[in-house]
Amino acid sequence: MQQDDIKENDGSLLGDPGQTSPEKKDGVKWQRPRLTRRTLMKCCLVKWILSSTSPQGPDSSDSELELTTVRHQPEGLEQLQAVTKFTKKELQSLYRGFKNECPSGLVDEDTFKLIYAQFFPQGDATMYAHFLFNAFDLDRSGAIKFEDFVVGLSILLRGTVHEKLKWAFNLYDINKDGYITKEEMLAIMKSIYDMMGRYTYPMLREDAPIEHVERFFQKMDRNHDGVVTIDEFLETCQKDENIMKSMQLFENVI
Image 1 (cartoon, rainbow, N blue to C red):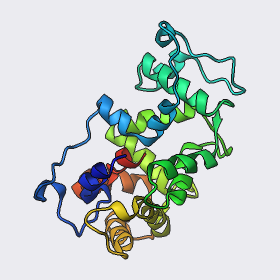
Image 2: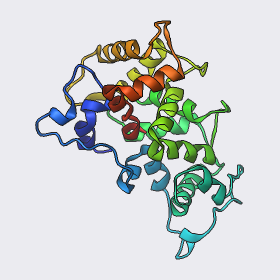
Image 3: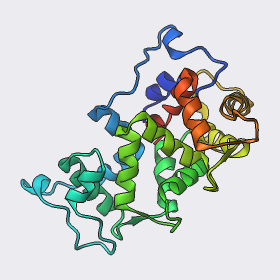
Image 4: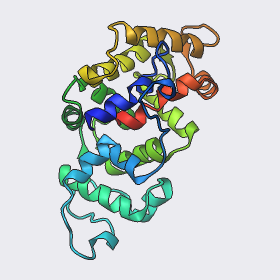
């Protein structure tokens, strides 16, 4: 990710309610995320798994997934096409890079931390990578299979608003008890601020994550019981433009 990309998106990337919206900032061109190849290639995880893809020969792009060289064998190509919004060639490219980086067919948390340290060297991405890994690791096994990986990417990059928000809720629900607490939301938001580091523009106040969470949590916790349910989260996010802009951060830091 280039420094200019970070500066251009920061105003709504972190969704700070105290800042002017990007559309109103002089000299900043704001574009809402679109489902294009460029959007796909801005994804850190996609860049990582495609970075090691080697030329495979003239017929490789049309071949089926190679399943014999890894210990964990993913589902067949047709099954993955059915449950994702990736094309056959996209799945083949993703699998090729995934296999090169993770010959065992599984990716662990340390690998996630290395990925984000590479793409965000200006900050500390350790905690964000930890939370993101746990969001992908649905069965809590300590390793992510290729099919789980691409299903998650499909939701984040090409899912409906409802699908993306459900995935975001799972990320914020750190202990997976079906509720988001203020502490959990603050931990996620602080990890994003820490990861963005010194390249944020304009410079962020030290208490910005706390202010951000206080305002958003008040809106989401509709019955004031100290936790946010999935229904409260979905309803509030879809009705609040500022929160929806904040949710768009996943398309920039995943």
